[in-house]
Length: 434
View 1 (cartoon, one colour):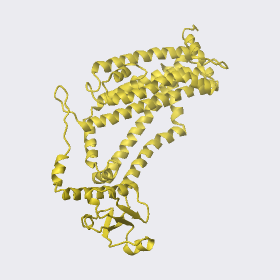
View 2 (cartoon, rainbow, N blue to C red):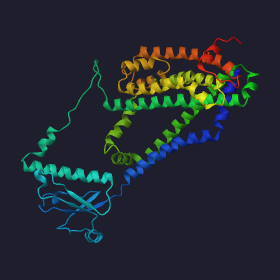
View 3 (cartoon, rainbow, N blue to C red):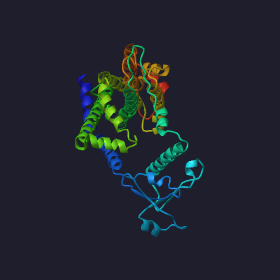
View 4 (tube, rainbow, N blue to C red):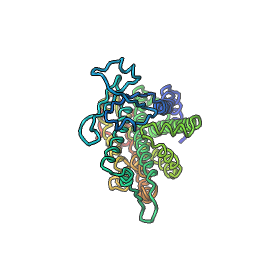
């Protein structure tokens, strides 16, 4: 055990002293900060303001158009046959909107909007929505229909979902769990692929440089393999811990310096289209999530999935030389379950109790990704306790078995040079006595 830890810490310190590690560790939180900063800046600094000249021969609409922070409307008696820059300048406008005489009668005549400079998509949509609403009101009035009655009829119906034991379903919390489950599943997918591949590349580098021959003279192949896996796993935990702390600090900093009003303004101007109250409710519902099983489950499935796949990646790294084609052919059986788990992830977050989700969370090669997408929905709502325990036992037993098999392959492959191999040969190495 002492030698394994020595190798693990050697691998750990080699990785964290690498400039690439420092750059990538700091780059992600800074990138997230820049992303949210850009949303705030562009969401709250919409400087597009349009002065609209309205040609309304019947004068049905011009008096009802209200100025706001995006549009200023003014009546224009007539327009020349050919508009030019002088006309816009003399009337202090940059748009001309022409209403047909009988637009409110329901005919298919178009409202012409002639611009000096092309309108942005958001401003164009806002203007069309404003005019559409005004025309609908006018049409209702002409038909002697009370608009308020129409609005009352169209009022949204409230739905209440309850479980069989009478518990109310929190729609916002469910949506939050959906997003969190997808995010954690993707995160687990990234960990298994990126850090597992790092283990393989590290083994290949030592084998190519003949460093492994020197190290194996002092330690057993199993100790070398486990030390490398543990060391890179420690790097992974450190990197994600730093990311988590930095992202938390950046979020607290944004909330402190901008305040709730600024955040609400950003949410109103952002893609959610004015649902600032929804953003605040999501923030409040975050506190209702049971974080203990989520964090505990993530750590368990991270360790189990990482050791399972890293041992297989290490065995591949020990068996190949420098030929990329050999690497790709041997990696394919390992990568296929990871890709398939991503497909099952979408099914699991839509219906955590579906047959596909249950099977995916029991199979050890897909359970690290699929089970994380179920845990966030709660126990037993998202996953019954017995399924969680059974999944953990299966993953643990499979991980120990594959670590043992990978160590048998590793001890032969790490000292084999200049020979192409395949999975059939590698399986024979498991039973080779040495």
